[in-house]
Image (cartoon, rainbow, N blue to C red; front, side, top):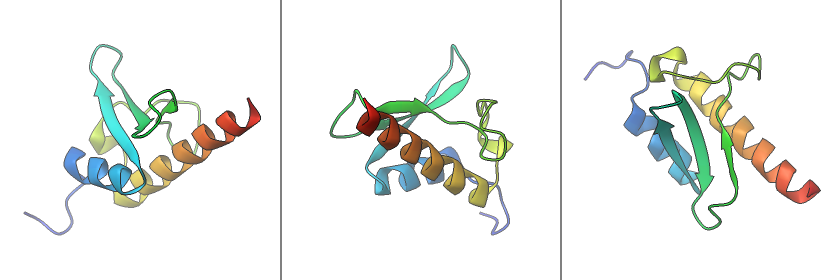
Length: 85
């Protein structure tokens, strides 16, 4: 395994799980979603952190830091949406 490799899907899933969320890839739609482990109705799509418009479609679309920011922003957006409703 290379130290300077891109984040793998397992790395991203482990990071999301450490935050209390499950990361899933929806093959049909080619998007990633985050779902709260305890409350499955709390979920959201993973967007590129710098645009927040385009959905992330591949693991290699972002590096390690980018994935961490994308996961954190998605969780923040999910929590904000739930508290506003």
